[in-house]
Length: 249
Image (cartoon, rainbow, N blue to C red; front, side, top):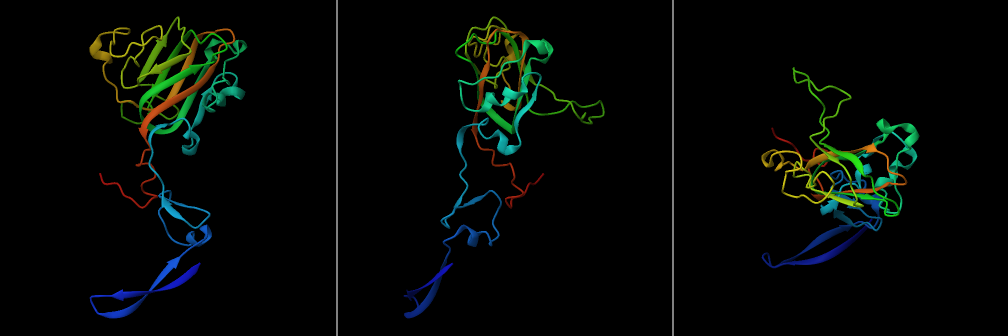
């Protein structure tokens, strides 16, 4: 810590006064102060700055920071993490020897996000998954008739069965109940006709936490390379109490 003395002129009093400036040039010095958790960054140079709030982020990239990651996988657990490593040349695929009932994978974003777009990318060096189902969940459990949550359960608010898919990249709109796709995985944004009347499939909240993909037929050499989830930005409500804020109901 360094202390420098500066001479200041106080015009209103027509007299001189001495002021003091306290500065810190190490991170350890700042750590002795009380400050809101995760609200400021203490850099090695002694600089302190607010933690930035980002816009238009991929919620998969920092899912593990919130305790997320691969939530469940029925086959080939070794390669499951490849769907979120940011590398489109690596992929996960289930082992046919494990049976079609185990050909699934679930990705947990670690927190609830408002999503505007979900992109599912398949390995470009092989045919894509052809028959599969996409399921989205906000992370809510099932409830009994007495409105008591049932532990170990998970409700999926949106699902889409895909057949005869030929695309290596599917762009989903979670704000629509059709997910913006027709039954073959083609772009069907706004139509809502693939699964039923338009009125049933027009709107959804876009709030998701968990993405599940279930295969209904194996595709030779096919692999799921990446899942990305575009969101409006960082959720500033997470950790608000720890940062010194409060919640009023």
